[in-house]
Length: 556
Image 1: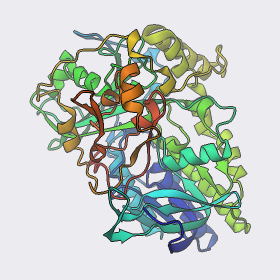
Image 2 (image 1 turned 30 degrees about the vertical axis):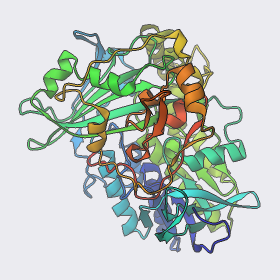
Image 3 (image 1 turned 90 degrees about the horizontal axis):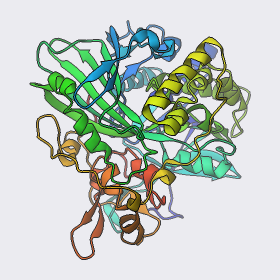
Image 4 (image 1 turned 180 degrees about the vertical axis):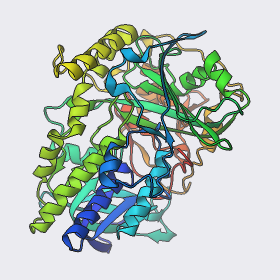
């Protein structure tokens, strides 16, 4: 680890952005566009912990181009790799042996996907990074921002994680100390449950008066399907089997690509406020693929890649204050996913653009290190906030009334918000955190899952392998325990060790012995951060590893 007093190299910028996702790259592009329009110079840096831009990006993805149209109006002509428009939009309720189609006219207009595009959000971010670099943005992949730099109560930069630190904290021959990137403003676009974002929310009380953040875990596979089964532009969403009524979640199947690359995304989302500690989201996803309808699609196909990540689900009432002294939260760092639409990239991009506008104007006025109040004001009157407000009760209604009652009432609520501009429910509360929703194992029975068949369903380790996940093994574990005795003394005896089930990558396991020994396989981590969210006592927490580690998602 680095020494507090060691000499660090420092680089000065006007704006430092953490995270090369849709929000961070949109912010960088808009900053440089404004500078170009004003005929001024502006130095912008983007830090990305993945080995390359897009390496850690995982989304559905059916992408609403609304923000892209504002940022880069000629994006389609200029080669953005979103070239499969939605042609068919289907909704189903799944039962174990079949499915029931929901007529599209029942669905609120905001659920209509026509005009959207199916594609890889990772590839889209790679393209956005090229546009940013063409404008003069400095993009640094492989550098993880691990520390906020605060002076006199103001965030004035970030420091990267050091390289070359051994497992026991010793400096190896390859050691490189942290590098400081300082800016007049720092924009945090780390994505879901970012460690710096968590820190700044707590430090400045940005969530005071807000509902707890809520999350889901999204699991996704990329398949190449057999000839005759590919329908480019076909978008399908479902809920129901294999999840029980009291467990929220659903699935998605998206077709894109060409006659040669007959790509289909198959995904599954489980809301993390489930009660049963024996539930295993990864296994529920594998069970889903054995449904007759899904099995028929995948038969004769090939699984190409796998990934998982947490999804923000708190929505409107959980969005924290966005500005803090010296910077702002953008994108999923603030929790801007529209849950029923399973979409957030357009909202992320728009908030990045709004924060960029506020930061540019502030710098042009000679300001630095203050709160970007103009960004907060812009958000509150933006289509992002209006988008989230319309669906604010979908999650709490589902949580309170289960699948049938919750989805029905949620649909009615979206219609009244759309047609009448108000909700009969007002703004509902979420109540507990997802961690606090986990109940002791004494209240539940174990769930027996079928063994993987290696054709449609698979085990976690073979899945992690095709996510191209890798970490330097000789480094400190980035997965920490606030109490080293917690797993054996509390997590296992009280909750039956749910970490070995909620983790989609097999990071946590109890090794056989008397007693069983808790083991963390940090090298398997796909950076989904579910452990940081779902651990019942919040003893396990996620930090950034050495830059460049983690998954390397292709076409995801």
